[in-house]
Each structure stands twice: as structure tokens, then as C-alpha cells.
Image (cartoon, rainbow, N blue to C red; front, top):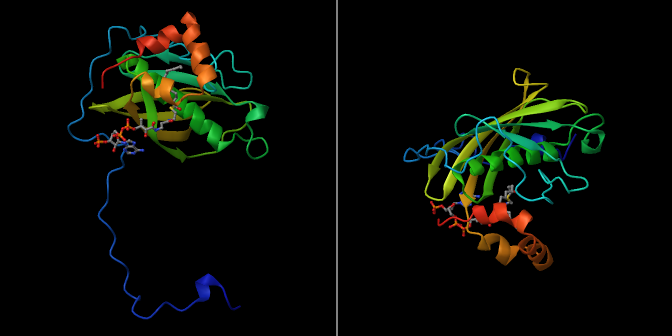
Length: 214
Ligand SMILES: CCCCCCCCCCCCCC(=O)SCCNC(=O)CCNC(=O)[C@H](O)C(C)(C)COP(=O)(O)OP(=O)(O)OC[C@H]1O[C@@H](n2cnc3c(N)ncnc32)[C@H](O)[C@@H]1OP(=O)(O)O
């Protein structure tokens, strides 16, 4: 067979393996200077629901018609747990969860950690390893923790297990969240949604509570 990429002769002078670049730390790995701060006084008590940050959020909003409606429970330290039940509407391959939706569930859980610091933060980078397929009807049990804080950067990691906390690992994630001011939302969001949120004191009080001075 001709024309196959693999059957092409190596270009002259390329017989030596290229020098590998030095191993680099992922931007989601906390630097040595990072710290683990105490829980904020406003953090939800251990064992209680963290609560939805926005009613229309795809990940946690109770008013979202097709969202994941995830609920997250605060842990004892800088950690949370969450469960995501994979439904027929979440399929990628037949009978299996779509990877992008699993990533969303991880993002939502990791994002909830910021409540423990009382910090408004958005996902800057999210890395995901898909370890095994997740069948429809299974419950993904997610445990997430903050791994370090450095300036505006909040580092975190999570693991999703099938069926419960002792089930087989299906997905792992590491994230870098960046603290932002409330203006991040009010300046960039669609004006009618921002107005609706601002006009509704119940919807917005949590967001206001998030205001920080990075
Ligand atoms: C209305 C209702 C409101 C509800 C409120 C609830 C909130 C909860 C919502 C939760 C919803 C669920 C979660 C969601 O879905 S959140 C939604 C998905 N995420 C976003 O939309 C974020 C989009 N990105 C941005 O807005 C900006 O890029 C941000 C704000 C992130 C940074 O732009 P900003 O101009 O502010 O800062 P900076 O650029 O100086 O960067 C600062 C530092 O960070 C480092 N860096 C940045 N990015 C990366 C990267 N990718 N890898 C590695 N490093 C990165 C950067 O090098 C720098 O480091 P250093 O030089 O200092 O060392």
C-alpha cells in the first residue's frame, strides 16, 4: 500500500529521537507557595447543602428545564460531595453518559468549593481524565477538594465514582478557578438576564454575598 502516513520513510536526519521537553507541571497543580486557608465564616456548615448559586444554572439551577439539577453537600474541611444521576437524556454513546456532561458535573462540583471560601470564582482551566464509561441509570458520586490557593487562583481536584463513595473511579478532574468581582457577570452577561437577576433579590442575594476584592 502506498500513501499511508506510517509507510513514509523518515525524513533524512530525523532518525534520532527528538529531545523531550522537561516535564512541566500542569497549570491546575498548586505552586509551592499556595496555601490552604481556613473555611470562611459564611461557609455552609459541614453536612449541609451548599445550595444553587443561580436558579437558571445548567449545573445546579432548580428552575432549569433540562439542567443537571445537582445538589452539593459541604464537607468538614475544604471539600464537598455531590451526586449526579445519569439519565437517558445524558447519553453520548448508546446507554452511556456523554463525556461533556460528566465534565459539567465535575465543573459544577468543583465550582461549589468556592462557597467554602466565600469567593466568587470562575473556571479558568479544567482537566478531565475519563477512566471508565458511565452507564445510564448509574449514580456518579463526586468528591472534590480545594488543593491550594494562591492570590486569585483557587486550585482543586475531584474524583467521580460509580454507584457510591467506594465504587470504581470513572472520572478524575483538576481545575484552576480564578476569583472575579461581581462585574465579571454584570459586564459580560446578557443584559436581560442580568437585569432579571438584579431585580430579584432572592436570586441575587447569594451572588452579592460572593463579592470579593481580588
Ligand atoms: C448573575 C448571577 C451571578 C452568579 C455568581 C456565581 C458565580 C459562580 C459561577 C460558577 C459556575 C460554574 C463554573 C463555570 O462554568 S464558570 C464559566 C466558565 N468560565 C468562564 O467563562 C471564564 C472565562 N474566562 C475569563 O473570564 C477570564 O479569562 C478569567 C476571569 C478566568 C481570567 O481573566 P482575568 O483578566 O481576570 O485574569 P488574568 O487573565 O490576569 O488571569 C489571572 C491569573 O490566572 C491565570 N490564568 C487565567 N486563566 C488561566 C488558564 N486557563 N490556565 C492557566 N492559568 C490561567 C493567569 O495566567 C494569571 O496568572 P498570574 O499571571 O496572576 O500568575
